[in-house]
Length: 186
Image (tube, rainbow, N blue to C red; front, top):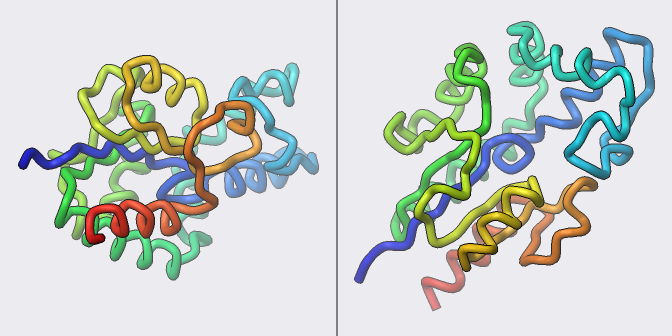
């Protein structure tokens, strides 16, 4: 029997990016934005003229160092255990729309997840829906919408910016992994 392929997004799925991003932006600019205010992935709808400055935070190595330092290690360990269990039944790939020049971010990811995800299972891609997968896990509704057109099973990690897309959804990667494991083990 052919193993199903999972494409799982990194940011705001395997690690909580938006909270760190907003906090860092607020600290640098004296603002008080909250993750819940970002109800669309088009950041300019929330930030108007500040969206370019907001995105510039992601290019700072110091941001990624701080993000990793503040990440919930219990959640990362639990996610790693889930990935190990899922890999018994699925071919599991981590996907990201990250600019390949953000080498520091990618290195930090492999410092955390390198024991379970090798570089052959890490894909940097803008148009993720071009991948031939069976299950797409993402927080970006527009990406899932494109996968859905191709009849791929779409699963979202619920976020304020993807409420409008109607598909299977979970609060955490852990909850989703438990569901997928239950499906194959029962």
